[in-house]
Length: 108
View 1 (cartoon, rainbow, N blue to C red):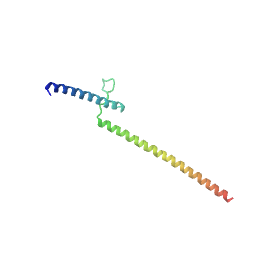
View 2: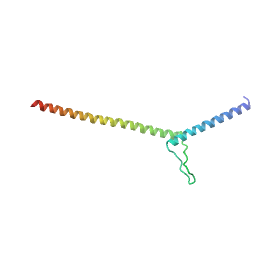
View 3: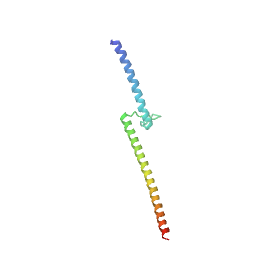
View 4: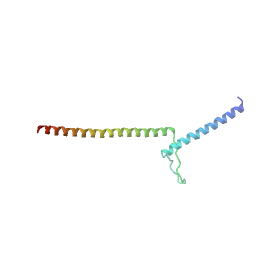
């Protein structure tokens, strides 16, 4: 490759890198919006500015949300099991009453 070709290729690669970095920053800012991560307002600022979180911070927050969702799912399942157990105990009580009624009816 000639020097001119290398300069052209280098310029294209630098532009591609800049575009990728801008897109990546845009994605991180979208996460910041979703999680309401704003920088503290300075006295002269009218609107709060979005944080520029790292991917590590984003992944930690997503992990917390997944953990909360998993806990909620488990909690819902436990509550459903509790209500099923209550229904079973009611059925057992009803059967016991019927058995007792049958015993008293058969004695007479």
